[in-house]
Length: 81
Image (cartoon, rainbow, N blue to C red; front, side, top):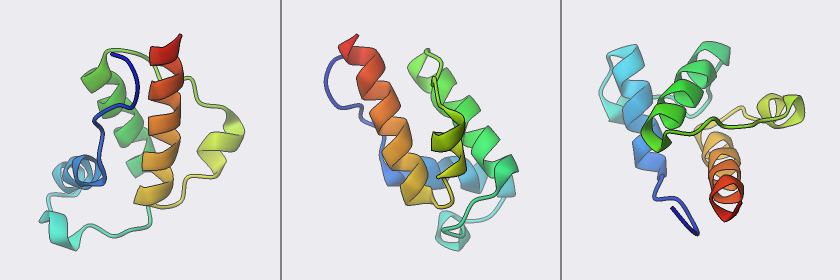
């Protein structure tokens, strides 16, 4: 994989919907630690690489959009080597 990953906001919302057993339209924007751990796990599985996130990056993830930005940065950095 090179360049920007194909991970989108809808992907993360769908992952959270699976965890909460709610329709995607009912998934809240804010995420807690359990939801964050779930997302990290699924993104690592999907891209078959660990997300090497710092404590500061993890602490800064409070919303789906925050997670998307951090995950894309991590995946892009790993792909660019």
